[in-house]
Length: 111
Length: 113
Image (spheres, each protein chain N blue to C red):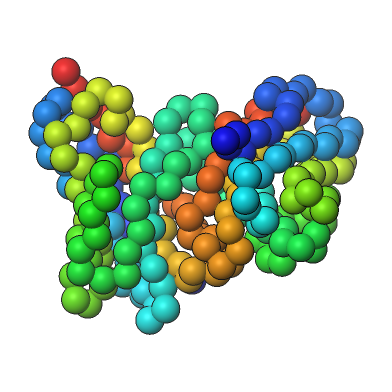
């Protein structure tokens, strides 16, 4: 089971780009990298998922280097509503047992 | 299109009692997973149900059991409640084979006194 390491917390001003990096040195060949967002008293919300290189959707971008031992979630021009906990997960496409949430990164956006 | 729904929202039980939590998956989803989230921690996987059977299980004792019905809805049962079972219980649904993309419900806040 590939474990992940993320910063415990980050602060950012509104309008800035935020990059959250996750380390996963023991990632397996068939593991995907997935990021979730969680607001207080709500369930986590899927943000983005990738295997290698770069993935972009309407919410965020995910950068994965060639060795796949880390990944970076990039949130463009954050707003106050982006204040949340962000989880990096590594696991296979099938089987929730592979999804280990860890403690996540608490992002606080400052006005 | 309704997302994942859970009931009840909040629940207070006494140590030693039993509790049943309910979950209805997102339309089109056939797989349901349950998580326990203690305060300040990430969600911990309890088990996953698919085709009315427990497909995978995390590191939780047998006091935690579940069920999935033909309409894909699911129940989580916890027997002999302990104070340490107090947590937010989250249900998540997904399409079979796409467990990495799970849709979570709002959770049930269980308090054991």
